[in-house]
Amino acid sequence: MARTRPDITLPGLAPQRAVVTGASDGIGLGIATRLALAGAEVVLPVRNPQKGEAALAWIRERAPKATVSLRALDLSSLDSVAALGETLREENRPIHLLINNAGVMTPPDRQTTVDGFEVQFGTNHLGHVALVAQLLPLLRAGRARVTSQVSVAARGGAIHWEDLNWERSYDGMGAYRQSKIAFGLFGLELERRSRAGGWGITSNISHPGVAPTNLLSARAELGREQPTLGRRIIGAMAARGLVVGTAESAGLPALYAAAMPDARGGRFYGPSGLGNMGGPPAEQKLYAPLRSEEEARRVWEVSQELTECRFPAADETQARTSPPST
Image (tube, rainbow, N blue to C red; front, side):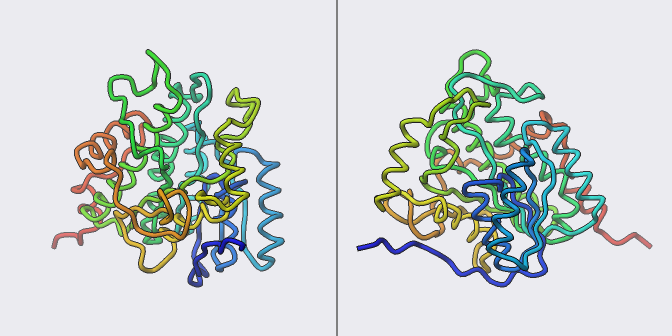
């Protein structure tokens, strides 16, 4: 008997503007396609123009009436993030949905971004932090929902505070866990800061479960010439309908968190099947490493220092939004 594929029905999203990182293939492409089919105008910031054009063709074939376009973005470069922020601010269009989905995973040897950060911490976390900061005026104008993609890997591990860049010793999975824990804490803290400052932004986090995506595939730029053993096992399980999700179902939690009316800020969404590896999306209990508000505040402050991107303090927000005294 064929397994029933989990799915959700998105509300109509026209004329909302959505930005999805990591949408040139895999889970991100599936997310962007579903948003376009629901009527959203979708912006795809991509690092590889050729893959971006192929993604555009894919979406337009399935959603011929969709408005979808490319912008340049390399999350491993803070200059590139700033350039995209400037471009979108010049367009002066409110952003209603931001799904921070892009990521890299476990290069076999330590690598750094152009700014000198360990590549997973710099790309998965700091690049997205800088992007949210750059787009903050547009997110506030659109009263946006920001959904940040973490990972089942964030169930364990911790932030390597004594060596955030893993310069003393490198553990690929440990560094990946750190990047996703930090990013999850940031997403939850963004919700608290928005509420305190009256920014009008709703922020939540999601995870895709386990699915055969490109994260563990051969990636020459990461020094990985062949798919990992884990990727081969996951692919075989997905093909047989065993426990794990598919590339399509893995995008559902982020779609639910970003677009469904009953999804809430400060909450965590993921697959509801066995071990939360696959199945329909649902709200989930926060992983232990994501529960500390003190850790979240520390991540917030350190991330601003490292990226040199500042979010407004609560008193600054109130000064801008309060009526002038008479």
